[in-house]
Length: 233
Image (cartoon, rainbow, N blue to C red; front, side, top):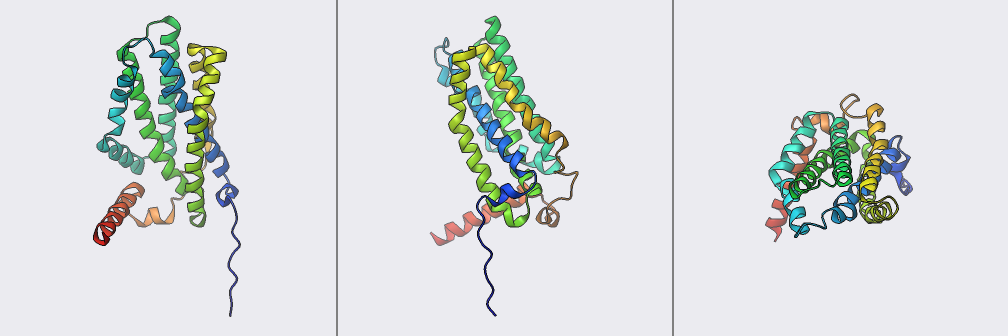
């Protein structure tokens, strides 16, 4: 008996209830984070002698592997929606503080380092939790499509973010533009408040089957893949 294969459906994950808003919200958040670290903040740190060293020092904390593992473990223990919301509130706090300091002319080097460090911490709150939340939104057969679309949305946000930042800079100025940038995080923040996903809903089957949690299971799979590649080399 011959069985006909199911037809391929383009962007299948977007047909899942809730994923469209998740995809759009994450792309918008990535778009909003880019002006903070590119156009607007580069303009605001221009008076400093070495603004690139300010950015490097501020991003060092978020780049430490132990910090990433810590926030991945927190994502396993707490509701990913709330973890994302914490990250979004931190992003908004950074934007508002930037705007206030620029408006009154009190921005100093240690302010810039502290705000960019807080921006990096907000990113490690948001990114692992967003990856885990995908497991709750889409069905297993659409998971690959959902992950690919989420990555595409992040890159689209990275592409359009500096453009939006420059438009805000030219039309509203540095202080008002970065204050307006804080409002871009609100749609996803409000949607996550009532979204019927996360620990309040039934967890995905493979998450229930593994007592170590999503992030720990993914880490074990990555280590096993590394061992296979080394043995084949």
